[in-house]
Length: 202
Image (cartoon, rainbow, N blue to C red; front, side, top):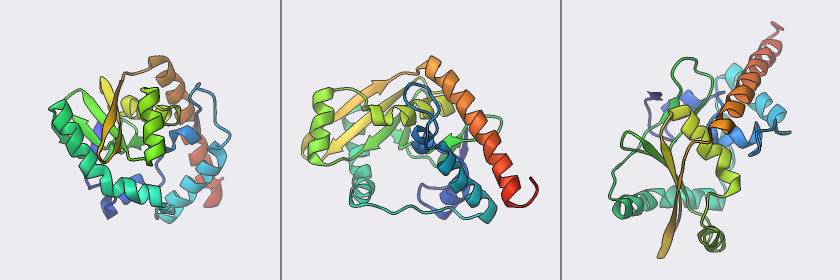
């Protein structure tokens, strides 16, 4: 694994991610069952334009997203206290070899782990606590981060102030990783073809 320098949300981080699929968008490329997603084509067009223009398209920040950004450091601190583990903040991570896709972990833990932090509304947090498992909507993101970093485990953290957090340890689903790698390579090949067409080389 290679870590591209630059704090998350910094200009360097946006530059590293520009036109490069990250784990948070893997659910638009592959379903949780390992099938191609119907959303892949529009996402590919977005990345193609980013690569050609050299500018990352900054999405609208909703109230819940902004709330998550503001609470993330607090959630990370709570996790460190509960788990008695230090979390290292990093920028954009890519797999060794080809720079095709990557992930932006909310933290790396020791030599083996990582974390994905979500700070949902009260009702959603309660749903997560009662289900006591990795929410399906984050399956591709968490497994994608495991695949990119080759870490042994990843903790999904749901945090809401003054309520106990949910911490679910997730291990690599190697069968899904095989399907993910296949779909990501296909996606990136088509992305390159689309870029060539946009610039007039295709």
